[in-house]
Length: 342
Image (cartoon, rainbow, N blue to C red; front, side):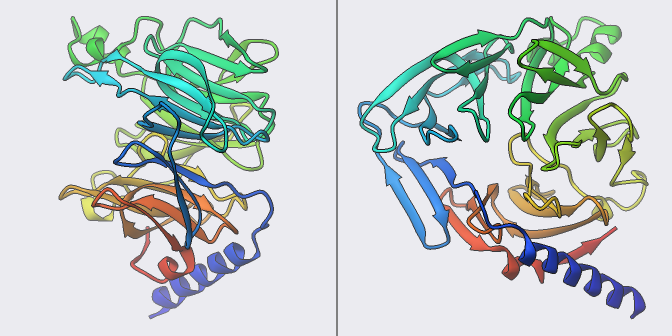
């Protein structure tokens, strides 16, 4: 009874933080629909479909800020069975009415709009990082390959998953020997400064450290690591100090008590810093959306679905339903469901 009461009180405090979170500058959510249009969700009852002139929308990456131009990918990314990309998508900027477009790059695997300065990071099929701003594309000079980045709030820096220059999914799935297997499965976190074009290591170990997401305070990064030989959430400060494990302290314990980790691109902070939202795979198949409180080290499964994105006042999320549709729901309805504390 005491433990249950403590758990209820902890989530009451969690809901209070949620209710008091600042309501300024909240994002919309962007999805590619089945009919290859751009779906824009701004609240539970506000959703519209935008047809882009002469362009099919296969990937919706967000919008530049503050210009509001949409960032889309047209053309499906083709991959081998090893997941090695064969061909990337074509990256476009699209006007808010969908009538004009500007091609940024071809052979793109992923794109990440910043929250300010009209900056855009994107990764091409060779796993190189590029920055688009003021109509120009520059390529980062560092030799490391990457497949995921997260902007810091200042939009002058980003944190990324870095691997060796010869890394590929092919080499990862079919290594020549044990040494190459270990090297291809090693990744670390790096801080990249755009102005100086410099890369600084945040982690330096022989494990997999990946899917970083910068906190709203710009001082710490949450990420996934196998440092304890099981994929778990960790965090670290931007100066490389304060490395801390947050979940799954006993990976040999009961599997149904372990907190699952997030897919790439599905992990995002609430701007209050109170929690993160993400999706993961269920043991029996399908996807579920989770909330995670890094301070209390608690997690809660809230809904079937994937690609959750925060909306409006921070109390609402958009997500893709198991049937492939786009929906939105209010978080307070979720917070009282299926509580899990570890």
